[in-house]
Amino acid sequence: MASSMMDSDYFKDMFGREAMRAVFSDDARLEAWLETEVALAVAQERLGVIPAGVAEQIKAAARLENFDLPAMKADFDRVGFPILPFVKQLAAACDPEVARWVHYGVTTQDILDTGMVLQARTGLALVEKDVKGILAALAKLADDHRATVMAGRTFQQLAAPVTFGYKAAVWLDEFLRHYERLQEAEERLLTGQCAGGVGTFATLGDKALDVQRLMMDLLKLKTPDITWHTARDSWSELLSLFAMMSATLAKIAGEVVILMRSEVGELSEPFEAGRGASTTLPQKRNPVACEPVIAIAHRIRELSASQMTAMIQEHERGGLGQMHLEWMLFPDAFVLLSGSLKHSLFILENLCVDAGRMRQNLDLDGGLIMSEAVMMGLAPKVGKGKAHHLVYAAAGRAIEQKITLREALLDDPAICEHLTAKEIEALLDPANYTGSAALMTDQVLEKYKKGQQ
Image (cartoon, rainbow, N blue to C red):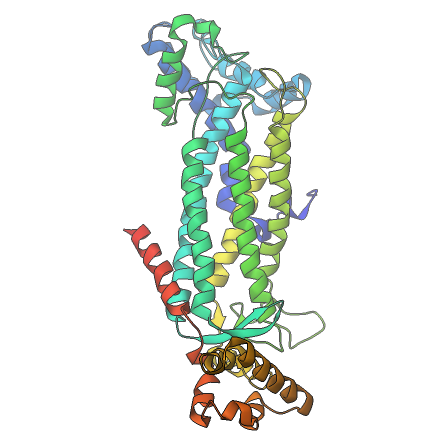
């Protein structure tokens, strides 16, 4: 029985992608360690640290089918650290003379950290693919609805007109920044290390840095300028970015949920028969994709905070549980983000936008949403202060008398002295008061298009 729904075979697809789970599976983890050990041996052989021919034999032995996995697990349960039992199995798969050179001159954390970076590289390729999908979906929504007028809201109340394309472009611009941050974070994160017990690599003398450099070249990772056993800022940066990305997706999902409300009805999750059904209310179409996106954001934020805790390490190697903390945090963060991206991509690529309902909702308050537009149309004629006073009074009468703003304006001689009925009509048209929304939307779309070239 799974300890949580995230680990449950029944529920796990709600919280992550199977492809991302595979990246951080036991087999993938062991394969990354084997890849690291082989690169180490090849680098050492080429630089004359270990005898010729040894690396090829280590590479031939470095296959999971050569391992007694139950015995390795039993060793791990007894030892408490994973690499010693792993190295024991790798050595056992080699000729006794070759086994002498397995894991030569390095330490547990070298293999663990470099292996995790290799897994992260694979995971980040999946993340980047989904992020590009999110960007494309948002760009399409912004472009398709550049002129779709809807109510802009502040403090969840009608405020002034915007366009849905503008709203989508705000989301797009934010996610373009996340994509830029992701590329920058990858540059720092994809750095391995191989430096021995206290990070000085004294075990290999004057060949140490050359071994590390060649080893990282073989793994296609960056070589660090100095050992980062206790410098976990790059990992914290990535999890902080994951938290930010998931928060943006949760914001979008939250907006969809609010605008999906029965009394609003402007947006809706994609629908298919049975999706979002209630056990008691036959008419319900619940926002079932948005909910996990919002929940995941809260969880990843907690993981990011815990990774900050893992940054606080002592001396040259931590020993107060920080490494074990990261073993839990890193894979979970990748899996959870993959779930958030999966659901968000489904929502945004198939989002139902009801432009007609958006237009109807602009009239919910009898045109009061256009008060600012009327005030700004009147201001050049009488001054901003007086215009505000006149329109404020007209709006008050509309509310008290339960009439439209149009009726209240046309009934006010002080306003009609300066504005004709035709001018008032034009000022009350929401399509005439979206400001620079379309131009700003176009700017963001142009930025997106340039990034695709």
